[in-house]
Image (cartoon, rainbow, N blue to C red):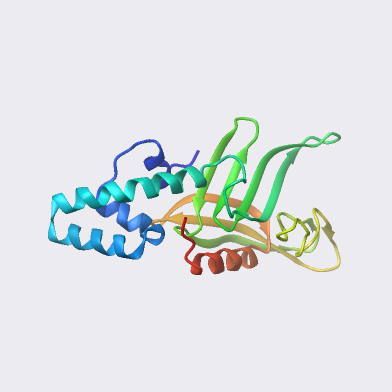
Length: 202
């Protein structure tokens, strides 16, 4: 499982207040973030301690939602999904990749492990992009009511070229999650960046 500042905090690894502010500022109330930044700059340890007592519960709540194995967080909507299958005749889903209005998630169903990152915190880049004239769709946009609005399931494209690539999520410049070889990676990235600009706060 990929480690990250998000995961480190979840596991109880202490981060310095300045590191926490750098990573998690987008999800903190603006006044709290400004006060903490001011206290850090002035070296006011007592003020920092008081402010961190407000910050930690916010981060704990955020982390619980990001690392939730189910998609049942309040207000969370599933927007994009891909299932990784194995087997020739009886195909079995071994991984689920998903993007919601809150996070990007990979769930390994065999080990019940999860990789996740909050969209409000992550930067995204597309890598290893290529085109193919024949291939199955990898990843599908899903409407709010479960209807497909960017293709339906897996389909084969033989009449036109399809773009594939890796959508990589970065936290503080470090890769924390990757969706490999998905369809239309630039289009998916644009959706993620739009959600990020909405400054989602939990």
